[in-house]
Image (tube, rainbow, N blue to C red; front, top):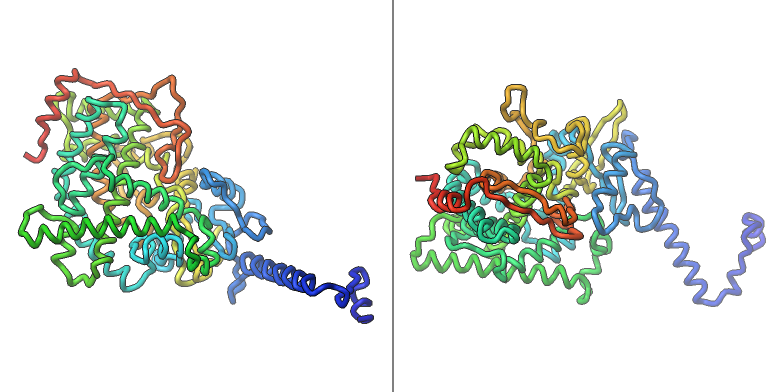
Amino acid sequence: MNSLHSALPLIPLQLPDLPIYEHAQLFIGTAACLAAAGVFARAYLVKSESNLPLPPSPPNWTFQGHTLPPRRPFLTMAEWIDEYGPVITTRSRFTKVVIVGSYKAAVEIMENQGKSVADRPRSISAGELFSGGMSLTFAPVGERFRRMRKALHSHLQPKAAETYQPLQSSHAKNVVLNILDDPHNFRNHVLSYAATTVMKVAYGKSTPTSATHPEVIELHRNMEVFAKLLRPGAFLVDSIPWLKYLPWYGRELKRGYETYKRIHTGQLNRVGEQIKSNEDTGPSLARFILENREHGLGETESAFLVGSMFSAGSDTTGSAICTVLMAAARFPEEQAKVQAELDAVVGRHQAPTFADQKSLPRMQAFIYEALRWRPLATNGVPHRTNEDVIWAIHQENYRIPAGTTVYGNHWSITRDPDAYPEPDAFKPERWIDDHGNLKENINLFFIYGFGRRVCPGQHLAQRSVFISTLLVIWAFRLTLDPTKPVDDMEFIIGEKADSPCVIEFEARVPDAELRHIMEEYCPDS
């Protein structure tokens, strides 16, 4: 004891006089300090055998790690990226998270090395509790992922998606007619269009699906939970896995899984009954999967695969359409340029169709710019490196170790001034070349994701957003209510506006003429 006192003369140790519980407290406190030190060392000091460091990190020495505000966390991430570089390392409790925040870095890491970042991190909250291991979105790379992906691609490749254009046109005209009748509920009209279209593609349902249908409402609520799951560190169970065994933990997530299972299984079973009774409902993803069992998907896998297309597809498509319409009202000068192009190519007395798409580069550029200006999934979906990824900047090499969670932050990428000069300005012309044509080889990963994890329904979604926004902007002049505040981040997935966006619609031809044109609209005839 004397030697110990001489070694640490400033710390008077009197362990024999401490009660038992104080010994325990001392032990626990020491263990906690050592554990925290280990976390910090692992998070910030790990280097490879070649001694390459992780990308730079904002300073943080708390046990919790880099905490994000509950509202609009992407703005905090953007501040870190502006200060510490286009690729940064953060920590969420025990987990290192790398955030990619520039266009060039996204191409170099997420696209060019896409094979190395194609995996998903294990997510107990999203992948297990919320989706029962059945979600394609959160599925790790493996046999199940490949089977599910192959089945979707077989049905949603560009040529297959093109066959749904007449369907999309016939339902898009209803958006115009519904706005004529009830302009204040434009959101519901858009969501009903998105739900109706996706229900037909997924399940062959030909009757309209209302945004107020109970199942649509339930799935929309589940998508709000899904948005929370995309936030790094949102659920403690992803850092402390044994929490999932507690019956009271994660009730919201478990209810979400039961809702998905009940609705998706019921919808798939209805298609199965239609097949048995030889009812002709036309092609659908559900029918395709049930009649082509060589994909090797079980009943629950099939139900979740088709159901994910409906739940995610209808919600994101509706949000994208609303974003474009809000941008039209928010930037009237740019809206007027699109309408001038429409007047020159189509005129005001007949409605445009998919056949006019190549002649309307400004319309397409407007859509791209709206979805860049307010990307739908600002944080992106987490990836996982399955091998070391090396990234270089300013003659400095960094290493992202195998097993690291990586986010492509859509908000920061779309605000990269090197890729998008004046990124906060709304400039559709950035997508048009010197000859007035739409630029070629446009990379839309800020809308549909990266590399091998790109959204399989992108070709269908692109067409739905195009034809619906095309008809609305052709039919109406959109303006904002000057007496109401505007929150132009309202339609970002997972965000809630302080006050809903109010858009006013003024028909560009007399109401009676517009109604007649749309009622007779049949572009596939």
